[in-house]
Length: 207
Ligand SMILES: Nc1ncnc2c1ncn2[C@@H]1O[C@H](COP(=O)(O)OP(=O)(O)O)[C@@H](O)[C@H]1O
Ligand SMILES: [Mg+2]
Image (cartoon, rainbow, N blue to C red; front, top):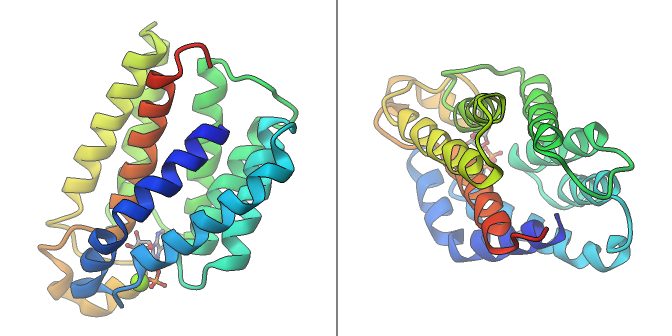
């Protein structure tokens, strides 16, 4: 979990301009800036929770996002991490089923706070198919790495599927029809988060 959060901060920093550029035609050109600020804040809090359980690490990280990021993404991803943490409170390691429960709780938190659902052209359009793909892969008995690959592929498809969508939530919804044809920045950052989770598990097989 610590490695994932650190790796995500690095990936977000690398993609700061890309995420901000995606937020330019259908938003206010700050998504990369918001996410980079938030994940740097998370990394600054990690030394204080290194020895704690995974639920506590996620809770602290979610709080860090909520308190440091203005804009929609801070509270949304902050809730994602806090609710994900509640689902695995007290755990020092995660089974595949725990991972599904963690991500599912995070997704449900975003849906609750964002009052959003599928095909509103938001991060939910990447997160939802990804969680469902992971759940199915685990139920089908795939090993963890393969299941995480299937999750990442589904997140990528979900991200791409936002391009033809008409935005119904957030700033992009102010554009109405003009939001069509652009990839959603939040769905893109969600894909990056989940891809980084897959890569973190893959490069730390003992973890
Ligand atoms: N109500 C919502 N529910 C879920 N996700 C949302 C909602 N509103 C916005 N988003 C996501 O947040 C992203 C924009 O984040 P960001 O640019 O950081 O915040 P802001 O829109 O306040 O500038 C969008 O691309 C979208 O994925
Ligand atoms: Mg924005």
